[in-house]
Amino acid sequence: MTQAILGLGSNIGDKKQNIFIASDLISKLGTNFKISPLYETFPHGFEIQPNFVNAVCVLEVNLSPWEFFDCTSSIEKKLGKNKSFLNAPRTIDIDVLMWGNYVFNTPNLILPHPRISDREFVLRPLIDLLPELIHPVTKKTVYEMYKDIKLVNGWMLRI
Image (cartoon, rainbow, N blue to C red; front, side):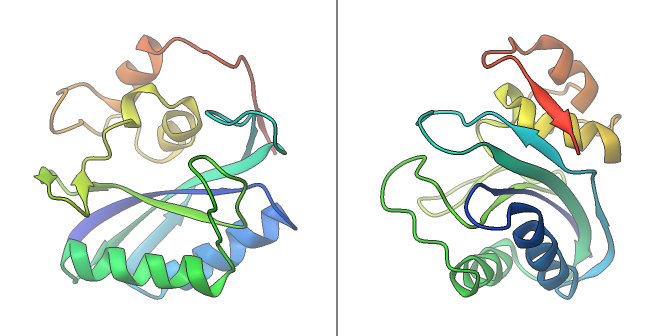
């Protein structure tokens, strides 16, 4: 079994419900599923769009990272993800953030996610679940990475 860590985000429709439905479907892919509290966050990248609801979840899985990525992509499609351009609004976004302590760099999957360390909307909820988790590349804990980031857009609200 491998520990998979995922980031969830939604900014279209019933955002909280989208996160809850996605997390329920994800929980069926493994065991020991846990989800962070939800946070409302300002959009990053393309900022003229609704605020996001974000969370992080963790579970133990018995799949390859590529099989798991295919499963999460299917969940996104099932929930109506239609990303028309980079950072576009979406019903659900599921990012595989980490896969145990493994490091992958393939055309379809880069793990750990290359932007974990500069995303407050990932690090803050991850602190709620695994503050002492060590990033396999930076060798810093989640909490240390969070302390190091520059808070670009200024706010997150736990909801």
